[in-house]
Length: 263
Image 1 (spheres, rainbow, N blue to C red):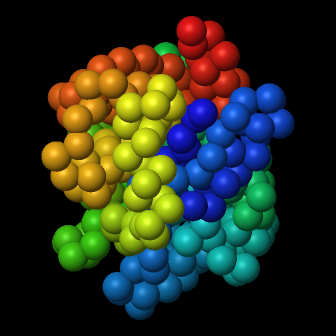
Image 2: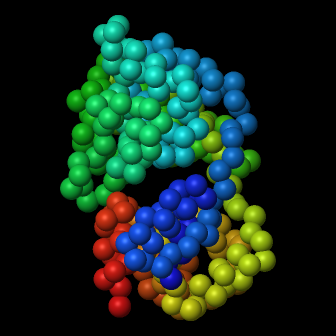
Image 3: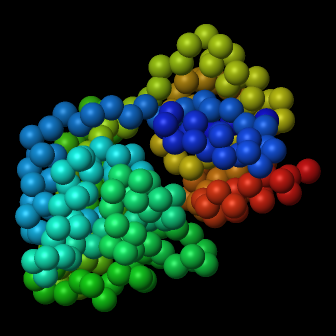
């Protein structure tokens, strides 16, 4: 059994995709997504994007895209072509790029890491988009924040540093809030069983791992198995005591191939 720990909407999509490949999977979301506290700041950022105020919009995840691109913002990007304003939309990977297109963002405007990149992260993305940034460039980073944390949000600070070093300016806006999920009794029981019954935890976030450990205090993870989609997440799982940790790229095909190769 593969335990998919992404936020609920994404987790259900991943479960369906894995099951379509004949892989037994179920969703146990370890991150809950809720609207941001400062809706006014989000609306202002949308208006600025619609007006062509930014050279590029970096969307840190499909959840960020889902909560940022409303019925007006994505069509406004298409209309910008008439005014010689062509805001680019940066995506950290193919999954987010597909979500952006489903929201109405033109595929021709989306930049992603190279398909053969070792990881889909800020470093790989910067290798593709750095030529777009110079003096006068403005980039909006759309990201989330933790429940109860700063309203500026968290994540992609390395990318912001590269943009500034290249002469560009960076603004941030929070599109959603991440928090720990509230489990019911069956979910709690499932998590405890999956810690030792041979299930494979699919981990795509260090924060999700933190929520898992907090939900099961004192749990022995030495018999647990994990598949992590980034080296930093893999190391966090090892630090948490997971007995078996493997790594793979976050693309569906890579995850499925890694699962199918498990003994």
